[in-house]
Image (cartoon, rainbow, N blue to C red; front, side, top):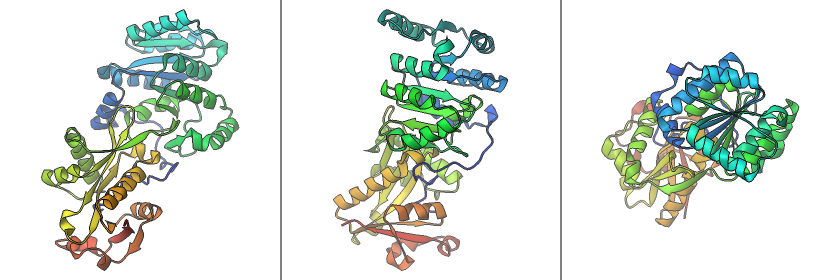
Length: 383
């Protein structure tokens, strides 16, 4: 594929391809594990576990062990004392046990804050208060950064959609959850988000490790408002940019580039950042040097971490690039691709398909003849 490729179609709510619902721990790439260990370093994750299977317990135990290098704290919410006992016997670290009343007095919540900070792993028994409801309540009280609501039905849709902003899709999601008998999940998610959580994941308990440790995930990421922001790339980003480009090349979505070419792209490039942490969710460069004097720029190295594609990372990057091109006084930008997904993406972002002769001839200098036979070009006026 070509310089203007994306790893995944960034249209909102695009379903994932069907994939197995479990994944062997040793099949999760170390780079992806490392990304999320850093992403969740030092934060508290509240996880609701209304139905505990042996596979679910094993996934929870592996997840907690996997985040240990990042000093991540967990509050696990279960229905009954028996569930708590099963969890505590399966997790090879010390755990504290709490019983969650319907209402916590201020002093009680302060004690809970101290327990989470000191113990790093708590198991809360919800009892009649309801597992999801208690998880939402505790998350809001702790102002936890991350919440996972597990449910036998998994994420939203089949296959699950990767991302949903509740302000836009609340009604659709509520209808689906109510249909499956899990309508209580939405109020719990909203309580957590309004209490300070940056996002809520909806997945099966058995999928917890894949949901939290892989870019593709397994369920649906829920947010209130924006999740990403656009910013110029910094020199500190260069290792992450190189890693993203290398992954794009390995996946066949980007052409190989030298380190010098990557650095040149980064100098004038933009990044889509996760608001909470600043981690890069995608990058794009604007190539102008090769077309000096023609008033034209090329979309270069557009790639998004697939977990964030449904959050609009690709569209955010491309819109920012067009604004930059306009500020530079360019008359237009173009992209070249051999990907059907990328072609559809550019079309949705107001690019028009054009012939190869509509873009600067310098583009085709030393171009791979096999690619030239199938490449498609897209143009957008920016003046």
